[in-house]
Amino acid sequence: MNKFWSDNLDTLTPYEAGEQPQDKSYIKLNTNENPYPPSDAVLNAIKLTTSDQLRLYPDPNAIKLKQAIAKFYSINTDNVFVGNGSDEVLGFTFRALFKKTGAIQFPDITYSFYPTYCRLYDINFKTFPLTDKFEINIDLIPEDNSGIIIANPNASTGICLAVDKIEEILRKNSNNVVMIDEAYIDFSGNTCIPLIKKYPNLVVVQTISKSRSLAGLRVGLAIADAGLIDGIQRVKNSFNAYPLDSLAIAGATAAFEDKEGYINNKAKIIDTREWTIMALEKLSFYVVPSSTNFIMAQHKEMSAKSIYLKLRDEGILIRHFDLPRIENFIRVSIGTMEDMKIFIQKLGRILA
Ligand SMILES: *Cc1c(COP(=O)(O)O)cnc(C)c1O
Image (cartoon, rainbow, N blue to C red; front, side, top):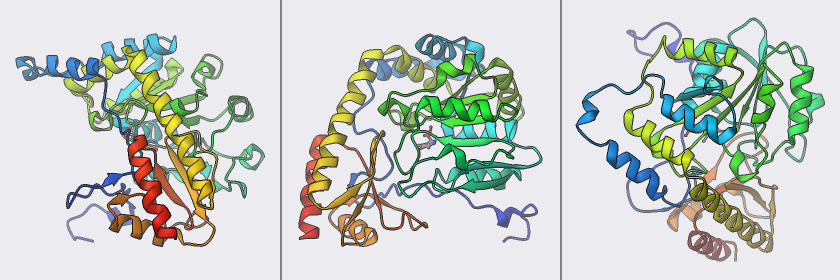
């Protein structure tokens, strides 16, 4: 606490990102980045935009990007909001749609940015428990909520809830906003975007950081009924009119136009994921079913924390969360097949 700070600043709990160490080169399997480069089409679009035109402000509405997204999902541009990473998009949507009397609901194990935004905006929240298998039982979501947010597939479990279950949540909570954070949806093929036409209370948030190999470009999106998008737009334009720079708009537009690159990229990750799951099971891990580009797993004997520390010494970074219910699990992002072979080999030696 510094005496010059605004009131209550010390009550915030800032998000802690997975480490991005600079001391030596690691095999990075800790922040769910994509191991493959962005496609040439994306890099060329960014290079072409790197010109004297950078003296101009970008389009505050990023209409080219909205058009590419609308075309990709067969929706209208007024159903699309874009921002500087889906983290920022979530920040805007929380402020625009969740700041009400009552408490919003999310699972007891989920993306740790949700409580962080709640504290920033003074939004009350409560959590409902995942089952013993880390699944969402929709009957456990209290109906006296002022909004619901679910990461689907969930972070850090990797489990995906079926679209018909999400539809049931939307029907039961028709007076409140239901937000579905689909950061990892491309690895499961289960998006609920088509439901926005039927449910004006649904917001779907996505990112190009994971399946499209563009975490460094910082672009996220929200898709919803035009009325909700309008509300999110009001918050954005009260905070930063230009959240997306010209390079980000150009690169993200090219990414949504390059369907083939995207399909090949996620197919490789899914193949490598399935190989890694089998290899972990052979090493006596219990592996939580994954619909994402990461795996959560628990070893029969060795603690997750010591596996994490020993792999770190060996130059491999994975994630371990010191949190209730998951403190004995490791979370491993899917790298290239070569990365994963080295990971499994070193892990085998550590366990032996
Ligand atoms: C990675 C992630 C995000 C943030 O993605 P960015 O677009 O890079 O900000 C949001 N939600 C979940 C669940 C994530 O795992």
